[in-house]
Image (cartoon, rainbow, N blue to C red; front, side, top):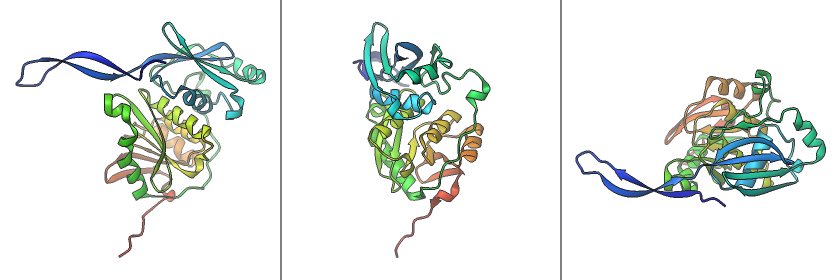
Length: 271
């Protein structure tokens, strides 16, 4: 398996000082080819860890599979120029996918891989239910805890994190990747592998909330997505139409609620 961190030499420059030779750790980024029943589907640039979670999460969040039961097996195979994720699905599933199979090169976390038309890329989704209530303070608790679940980010400063949090703000699962979409796909895969009900918690991501990040959250059945950075206009539109609670600029002591404010409440403080 490829390493998640790599050492590299560099010259450090600091104003008022002479440059000096040093060494640093950088996040690994490798081509990961996803094949389904030996047919090439997409090549993603990703961090080579938790790839089985990534395979399941990607296939579900991109609408390739309808349930985790449709994925029979995943093998991680070393190749000369990267890694192959060899997925095995039932023949009827493979036939269903044949019409949308694409050979694409995804940049780090391409979010609309496989979409061949505007209708496929921007499509309506069934509205989410109303199973979740989260205190504003719980979102802040999760935000404070997020760095402790990002060891690769602490070592390299170059990866995104995605965390699944209990309603009280405790982080249950977290995944990292150089691609923000990949990190979320890995988390969704891990969540489903663990048998967790996505409706019983919320997502926190260390990135902006783009349309694709909202789409993946909605397809996973999650009812609240909190992003450290800004949402886009299309993300807000999809969140509103789907009934997703979307938070942006989630920073210490503050966050903006763009949609679904009814799921959030103020904790009562005892005197």
